[in-house]
Length: 269
Image (cartoon, rainbow, N blue to C red; front, side):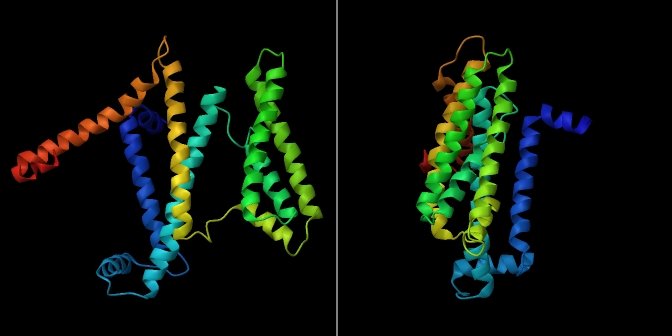
């Protein structure tokens, strides 16, 4: 308990610990699998990949075509889910709110299952999943806004649980009605989720979309902070600049140190 309290009181140490866990997990994911790669094999594969001496090597295929795309996809998808959860908490001003509680996960699952049930293409499956999640949140918000109780947060949570249960029943019904040889495995596999089939082309399409979503979420979170950390509402530009200015100063100080050590490197200014 004392250790966890100390970490919460030291955000920098907590951040360093999380970054260390992330990089440790990445290294572990690179080494572990059906085709294990030892640290020495991993280093040799990376070195010869840049030198072009191991083209067509099995280790190179496993590293660059299978594991790295899945690792990057897991990191970016996890970051997007974390931003989405924090955004929900900021929008509804409730630390208990999450996509599961609001029924977003169940709504997206029901929409995707419905599209798979009617044998629609992948684009429509994604569209139905997105629309199902949005409609679930709208239903929960509408029910909570119509409530006249003195505890709107409790009504919001209970409404989300009720909508999620209803949509979960709809998913179960679709599973019963689906073809057990084609549709049912597709619905089950989609609901479970997997990064098995991810490749480099998918990453090229995925990363810009995630970045376009994370940037507006960042602005929304800073706007939420502007309305909560001070007695008066702070302009959004102040907090945005406050986040970017320290990083710029860090780069400036670092560059100045490089100039001091090596005067010939001052051309970067």
